[in-house]
Image (cartoon, rainbow, N blue to C red; front, side, top):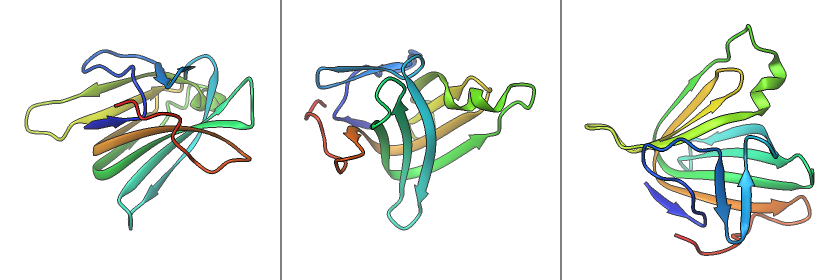
Length: 136
């Protein structure tokens, strides 16, 4: 998987933090997950977060050339609002499988995406999605 426009993801090391340009994003403590979109025609999967401190700001993980998506439901023992909090994410390259990113949420739900490319962008409600930098 090629990472575009951000740093902070390392193979087999769980994290909840990434860096876009000079902006440090703590997705566990400072951002709320607001949903996803799977566009079959363009073969893209998008995950979106809203900044808890500045609600007009968003970040978007855009997976392109998607090979597979797996979504596991939440554990009903957890409150619904736990779905908005990322616990951790991890990048893995397993033998005989396409490289993938897996996202764990506080309600125990997971989203796993295998794709060729992952781009991370920051934007506000007043802007269109535009790259902050060209970090590769």
